[in-house]
Length: 83
Image 1 (cartoon, rainbow, N blue to C red):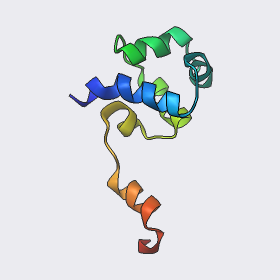
Image 2 (image 1 turned 90 degrees about the horizontal axis):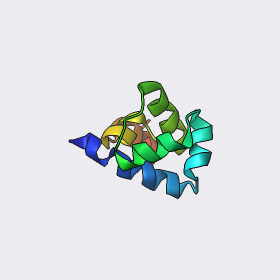
Image 3 (image 1 turned 90 degrees about the vertical axis):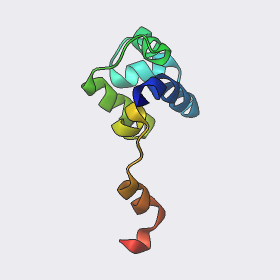
Image 4 (image 1 turned 45 degrees about the horizontal axis):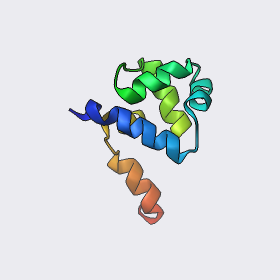
């Protein structure tokens, strides 16, 4: 199940952005303990929080939650001449 990797992706992305759990929690408007629970796989964020997490981390909600990469968006980023 793709969700099983959500906690790992969340933690990796947060660390790549050099954000503490507290800093990320302030960006998305949740208590820092929620970020810890998400990263441990003990709870799942609501859709509204997932959207804010994705925005703060610079990824799509599909990638953050399911690990899916939108090939159309990827193509746009990699090959502007095709547009």
